[in-house]
Length: 253
Image (cartoon, rainbow, N blue to C red; front, side):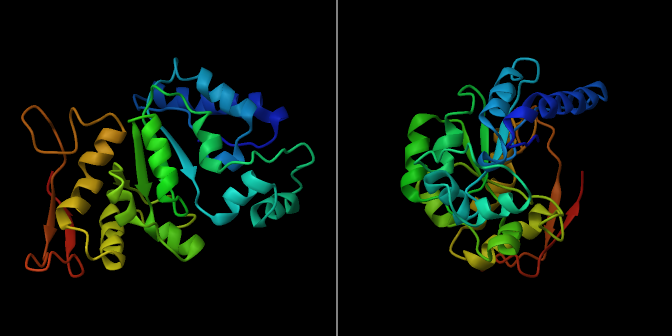
């Protein structure tokens, strides 16, 4: 994940991202170079990331519409996020507001032939989701509710996502905004705030949808002949109400 809003640092930051990605590849691990967020990546850095899709192919992720001030920065050039950046000494004198949402801005910068995970989407609207979903079919909407509560004291409108037939997966963000890195605990939190969602839907978010987003569904994410998924045992699930409140998880394989 690379970031710099300073166009003059685009090559420097990209070179460091390439160095890290190569180190992962040399260790036998998968790695791609992805943008952090629309507000933290210059157009020049976005351009460099696109050019690295051939040597480092794979799905992309980008933080999207995590706060209201993100859209305010792109639509009017004002807001809390802009003031925060100025406080860090970042020069906004050459910044021209896009007169559009941060999602619309980022969408134009992303390669069309790769899966894209839009992470957070706390402030995304139904109309925005419908618009971008109409433009491509390889979008995945990743919810990180614990981090959203920590940063914004709210979580995304997941029922609305599902009403728009979004392909939803679940993440944790990092320990910078979360006290644990457990997908199961994220599912519990989602169920607490949206108890109307079926347990089968929650489990698919945490398994097959994530595998599809990462192009790993040929081997992970579900029980099918020829696949080698991990196996987790969800203990003490209240099957009558489908409640996870008292449940725990244990790895079997």
